[in-house]
Length: 266
Image (cartoon, helix red, strand yellow):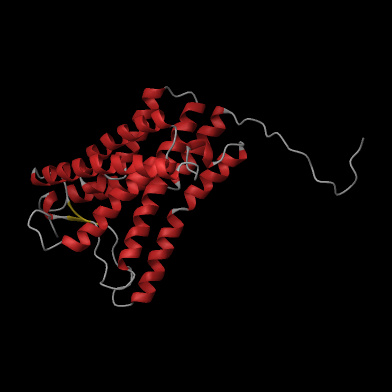
């Protein structure tokens, strides 16, 4: 029986995209997000290598002021940067929803907040402490720049912005580099080992602006996070872990820089 005009359409089955289409989609998503960041980090690292002086005498600055002396304009720029950095996550959510999956398929949802936070906290404690030691060692060896996690002015929004920046980093990286990328690589025929290597090297690449230590440290973190994702089937704990690591790094530096001798400053 023919449906009357204006009747709601029933569910539509979209054709499964070809491997080539999914591969092109993946390249475009990365080119709009962390793949582009990897190229930028490589150029930055080459610039640091070819600049007079050692790497440890140069600084890699995160969370800097965009409008010194104009706190409200600076805040607007900070919020704009955080919001636009999350657009690739919304794109991934849209692309996954089109295939009937959504972010729930990679474990980025609110089904297990307690478990995700507990697992994330345990991972952050191990990775954060180990990462700090690796950074200090790499800098002492002259293979890493001095990382300055924040140089924001002392205004009321400083710590909320640092926390928001940490959460943004965590959501963007774990959703795109772990959940989405592993799903797409699997759909296009990549084996588990090759997909793990691609995810880990990509993570290391966009941290190369910090130096060799930043690259290899994040490759190791990438391997661990892929293994944990495959074990748990969720990026939720990884987002929690990454957010906690960055919050401690950003806020800790703001509170301790210049007050303790073991923390390098630029």
